[in-house]
Length: 77
Ligand code: SF4
Image (cartoon, rainbow, N blue to C red; front, side, top):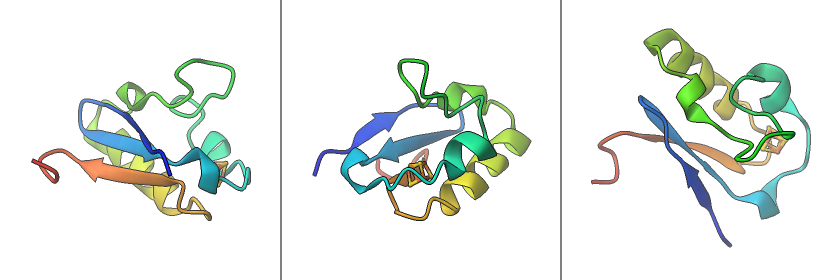
């Protein structure tokens, strides 16, 4: 499966499109980051403060399919 990574200032988000079940938890939870009318549709740069990054972590944790994952900076280096 192919996973795409979207980079933000505090956390990154990876997305495995094949897993998505289109529940819209992400777009309802944080529309500034998840906007399907925009390319790229995921923009973690919109979560530029610690509070917004926490909100993004919480929304991604609620993704029911596991398509979305948070990558903390420093975790993969
Ligand atoms: S929350 Fe997860 S499963 Fe639901 S639309 Fe977003 S990526 Fe897809």
